[in-house]
Length: 355
Image 1 (cartoon, one colour):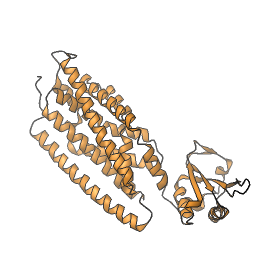
Image 2 (cartoon, rainbow, N blue to C red):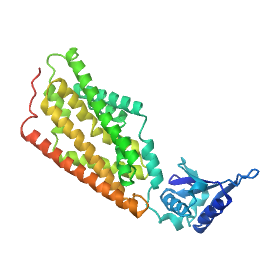
Image 3 (cartoon, rainbow, N blue to C red):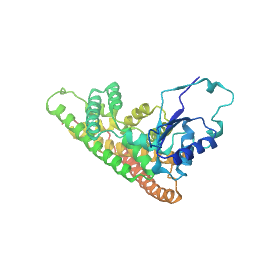
């Protein structure tokens, strides 16, 4: 029988005492393990390997940290493609004893590692964001939903957004600063790319004289009811946090997140090139509102799912920081919803004359 909800944990112990204490923890929890003695010559090193259900890794890691021998061991958590064993077909699952001891998701350390790995190299991130913005702008100009979907697929937006949420609940200031910096730089590059491409299209006569901008800008989600925009963004944030914390299919959620951001950026580019204030204001407002809503939803989800620092002092500090950021995001979302409502009610979304 094959299982995919397992992790293989390898503990490299540097001393005999550390090895004995780790083995004691595993035997106390009735876990099966393999010990490989690496003690060649005078060395006391050893490797201890054991499989664990994903949701119990946190529990065992906590027990190992309580030994206070972090300087005497390395812990590596491996995500295998599948683990095949007839033991999983037995009526008594050998991991029932520890299955309920932790949240049904990946451990805090794996969550941080996954979120960090999702933030790509800066150059690649900016290039992919620029390409995605250009494709989204082309999708708006072509009035093609398939092209817009293509821009969503290649947009690398989910990494920095999820990293911001993870770093907030787990009190990781370095990761938070890095992810926010990526989002700001990515947003600036996306807007510049969209505006530049739309401007080139306009002034190189790549569109005919009968080009109807007002019709094409209806592709923009900034003309949709404001409440529905928030619901979609919140859903994307909740889905992203849940997928990230349970090793779900995060790529598909990334497309959903990009769907809330890239088309409005394409509309902003077209709006600037054809001097449409309504498209520019509405598009920028929608982008910001969606990003803030997704971040807010992801932060709340991860905290509710039980992800927070270990010590009470760190928990209190993280909770205070989280409440400040949640309040700021909430106020910003309300302000943007009001702005979009005024833009809609003022009639600025009516037909836009060609220049």
